[in-house]
Length: 214
Ligand code: B16
Ligand code: MG
Image (cartoon, rainbow, N blue to C red):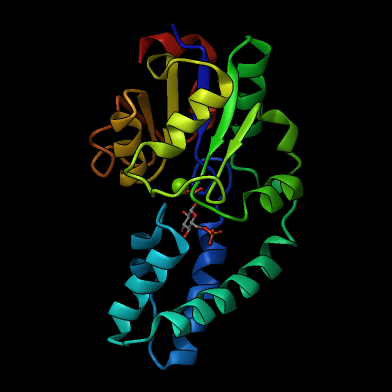
């Protein structure tokens, strides 16, 4: 019996990938190489530091740990400038309505994101109060596909993992949900998110009545 829904943020509730892309592209340009939209796909659901390492690999650039910290901070400042301008109309179609419908049906809701900026984003889009628990990059030490983020979400909600459904757009996120012994709904393409129990294009396609059928 499903008692809780846990939502990834980027790619499920909002499309912040576009802002991550602009900021990483600007950093790559300062380092003297190009970073394409195709490359950006590799960063979805991946932590900030791991994203930087992937970018440095693409540019064939080697940096010390201290330099990496500075580069990640620089990128994050540009990213934060952009997300500070976000508006409620940037919520992906049906996302707000579906989270609210879960709550109306007595199903608990949590955020399970790798981002350390999730509170800024939720406040800007006006969805902070729709989540009973918020687990993000500030609360976890192990990145997806480790199940930590989702297990912490279930624990904070007081719900058993088997009674949770995770909504995720990244392959590593679907793996994390499976590693947590939870149901996983993929948001995106069937060919990409093969391990998910079901794949939809967005939360606008899901209804609360279906949750126990996944
Ligand atoms: P930050 P999610 C992830 O969000 C993004 O998909 C990923 O591209 C980003 O690097 C990561 O958050 C960390 O974000 O730099 O804000 O801490 O999909 O887990 O909600
Ligand atoms: Mg995501």
